[in-house]
Image (cartoon, rainbow, N blue to C red; front, top):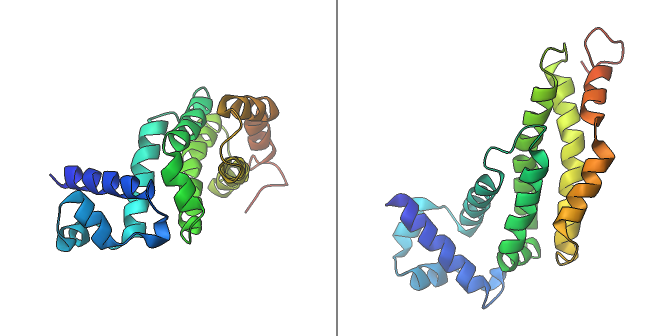
Length: 191
């Protein structure tokens, strides 16, 4: 029942975002549209931004859905772009509101999870410190999220497949090359 209520609140917020900007939407608006009382909202979420974070997490979890390997990362990113496109009014409104930082933090967290999975897979059998693996994942994370945010900022006009293809061409083999450079027996390791 809890998931159904959360999903109803999500649908109400998305519906309201088609009518007015996020800054004009209140919890009362959401609960009225959803047909529940305010206490029910507060049982599930502490505020609208908490609801937004939950929506983003749910949507991206469905989009990535296990695509955390070297062979499938492109699909995970493409599906993330597609999820953003499918939720364009929601993402655009949130991105252009005061909660932009929340959506940026959310994308960094989600894509880091995908990328650290790729780095861990490629590091199998190598003697690479956790700090070096995190550094490599973060490096790519900032690049990917930067591209995603720029795409959102430019109203999602470019073809996501083209973006992913360009990134794939650019980094093909680079994760393994970076891991090789950071093996612990090397002098240029990250402490």
